[in-house]
Every structure is written in C-alpha cells, then in structure tokens.
Image (cartoon, rainbow, N blue to C red; front, side, top):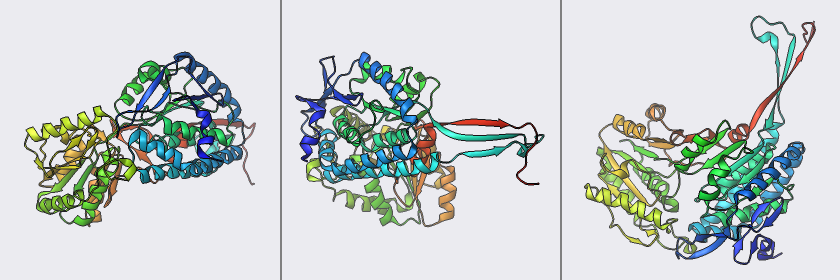
Length: 496
C-alpha cells in the first residue's frame, strides 16, 4: 500500500481537509489558510478555514460520541490506541516530510518525533489500563467519631470533551501527548493544530482514523485563530482544555471558565554553572540544550549563569562547539535551520540588536538570511538587556557572569517564567539546595532541561503554566473522581 494512497482522502485539490464525524471534509467557507515553508518562504500547503457553524457541529458530534466511547471497555480503548500507534510509526516518513517542510525541523529529528509519538500512545494505553482499572475502597471508621457504617467506592470517570491545542514546534508529539490520555480516559477529543504544523497533525489524525476509532470520538478543525480561536476555547461543550504555547494561554485561562486547564506557556530556562562543574559536560549540554532545533523549544537553555572564575574557560569550550554546528536547510539534517516565521526572526533580531547596543560581547558575527539565523553566543550580558529576560525561541544564547550562587538563584527566580532549570556541579548537596531554591517546575542536575521521557511529570510555575503533564498526570487531570457510598444499617467489620 503506497504512502500517497493511504493519505489521498485527506486532501482536496491543493487544500487539506478537516476531520469530523469520522470523515475528511471540505469547509463550506470556501476559504483556506496558507502554510508557509520557513526555508523557501513560499506557500507549501493549504488547510481548510473552518467556520463557527462547523465548529458547533464538531462539538455536537463529539459530545454525543463521548457518551458511547465512555461505555467502551477499557481494554478495547487500549487496543485501538495500540493499533493507532503502530500505524503512526509505519507512516513516519510522510509525516516527517511534512514536519521538514512546515516547521523546518531537521529530517532525522522529524522522524524521531513521529516514532516517539507512537511510543507515547502505546505507553499511555498501557498506563491508562493500570490507572483507570483501579479504584479505592474507603471505610468510615477511619475518621474520628464514626463507626463502620459507610463503605465508599471511588473510581475515575471522563470529563467529557477535551480541546487540545498543541504548538508549532512539536505539532505531532505535543498533540498525541494530549490526545492519548484524553482518549484512554474515555473523553472525546477535538484537536486545533497550529497553522505551522497543521498538515503534519492532519496526517497523524488520519492514523487514528485508520485504526478505527468511532465517529466523533476524535476530530480535527483548522482555521484562523482570529475567527475560531475564542469560539473554540469558550465553547460551552468543552469540558477541558490542554494547551501548549505562549501568551495566548494566559488569555485562554481568563476566558475559559470553570473547566480544568492544562497549560505549558514557555520558559526562560536558566543553566547555573558552579566552580566545580565538569565544564566539558556543561559545554556539551549548553550547546545541545540551547541550539537543538534552532533553540525553538520551551525547555531550551535560554540563559547561562556561570561563576566568574570558570566563565572564560566555559565560554571558550561552548564557542568551539558552536563553531562545529552545521547551518542550512532541514532536508540536509543541519543543526541550525530556519526559524518558523519571518516575524520570529525579526523578534530574535530585535533582542540581538538591543544586546549589541547595550554592550554585550558577540562571540560570533551576527548573521541572518531571511528566516535563517546563524548560532550566536552573547557573553557579558547584563541585567538591563532584553535577552537576559525574554524568550528568544531562536539560536541565540546569553551568558551572564555571576559572583556567587545567590546571584544565580536570584536571576532565575526574578523571571516571570518558571518551567525548568539546570545546575552543573559535582557537589550533590549544593545541587539539592540550589534545586530547592529555584522557582521552576523541574530542575535537571548535570544535564540540559528536557520534557521527556514522556512519562515524567512536566510542569511550570508562574507564567510557565497551569497543572502538570506527563502520561500519568495527564490521565489523572483528564478524569474526575466519582464516589458511591453504601450506607449500612449497623456497623460492619470484616471479622469478629
């Protein structure tokens, strides 16, 4: 079965369809949304511009389908998810090709994202069977003043309709990290993919379609955020929102009302380097953490806070490694590829120019061609520079020299973000003390920040988010507790 034939039903002419009621459909709007290739800066794909009326119909069918899906045996839900995971991995190449063209992800990393996503779906299915297959049995006489006259049985039940909104940088993996826990828990799922990355997500959704999920259980709507964004997030049929992205998440949280929210909204992940650190290890992780996928990762190293006594040595080692990074198109598996949009490149350039104006040391010459920005390390960055505080989401990394640990912790905690941070030291006691003092959701010791493995808890403090992700946490978040209490006429005991 040829790959093109497998996916031929998801496109009409030159425009990809949206998915509702188990079918691929063309919007009645007659309009489309262009997806610009970051490398060529030309229109690569088009997707449907869905209307609010079509969103209404999707929500209606999702609500109806969810009632039946919740009654589907847990083992059957898991079986379908394992099937979807296998299909997803079988078709990793065409999906990865879309990631290369839509978001300029290096080819090898694009394949890895798809395979990792399939593994996440399977793991979630297995974990869901374990978590949701268990309940609790409580007895009343464990609380003071009570006899054993009540038996309480608790279990987890689905929330209803989950709205999933992933970001451009991982449009497949961060979509399935929301889809899989929602589905195994018995919810229906409506996906609103990012514009850049929408076609990759559409291909991924087709793998769930091929697995045989019931109509309406999973849907995918595309369109302009200005036209259907608020309509989706404020829709009365939505019972939960899982969002990954930027400032838009704060606006969503203010409008969403009384429904569970799971949000990851970015970071300014600080890397603290102590005097006793393994500087070679630190330099390797700084380059990997700061420049992989051109720095377009929420968990990228965004600022290096290094003790003055080792700063010269560290900067030299990082520079040597930065000089070895390849720069060019994603098809060539280059380390540094074009950032996702021209506006992103302009924003990054604004941070660079501000740092230049205020006296930062440029370890490399600043170089840009269209959306492609060469990797840049900025030394001697000061507190009054925008790059010290703002998230560039690009291949530009500031180094701030600190005199003591307190300065490093203070800078980290003064940020409005609190996603992750990392510490490099050979002294585990110092590492633990600093970790406890850092106001971040996760602290990595002697390694760069990272979201995975995907079953690890993943959360941010402050403006970095609400709630916690990771397979187990997401399943728990997308369910609610249901209790049934049996009232007995007389106290009952198991023995005696």
